[in-house]
Image (cartoon, rainbow, N blue to C red):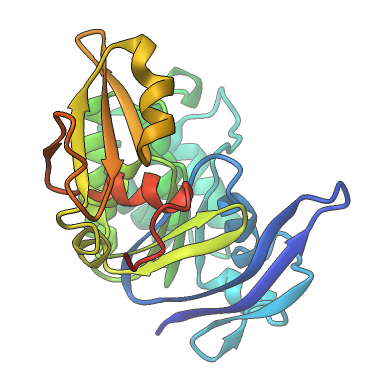
Length: 294
């Protein structure tokens, strides 16, 4: 079962065009939706999750019309938004039990078994009686996944799930999402390139409401082969180099800017070739320097 999005558009009353004719086919497995903050990712996620209406376009989950059959979608949907609220004094175990009851698990024994399974799957069994207010960022996100998995969803949406997590928590979260992605459609919406590099076999880059790339990450990286060049420069030189070359990124290494430039030919001037990666794809696409052909 695929999720098919066709010509989806949304303009807010303030004139911001959050989605501009977005079309995507999202298959079974982990799918990365990569874009900077404000790119339209959250608008797209909320629309798929039936929380807001687009101005135009269609979404289908298998045979289900997402925009018209919202109740059918919600039966098959798990959703972890970027910010989600919980009752801080309630334990993880009791909160999951309550949410499962709200989702229709009326049999007490079946609900208990479900909650125990979800706590084990998200590695929260040892803290099941701890108040949610005492959870770390990683524990809180794992609890968010646990509640999203109630009812065995066929479609799971996670919006900016690793922002603010330390490296250890992020790795644990990666492993959990990878396991889940073996069985369902998982859409990972993020501005963190590493999340997509680590987890996703398919992806899209979205910027200013438009899809700039959709496909396999390795294909996007392959399009940049032999076209990325690197040089360490002095901070005052950044404006000069930005004016002379197609600079796609700059980061400080030991206090000096390390710049990457996009060029089909050797730029000379001390630049050396480096293998392209997904971060180069991301920055070249959103800066409009590479449309997939050069």
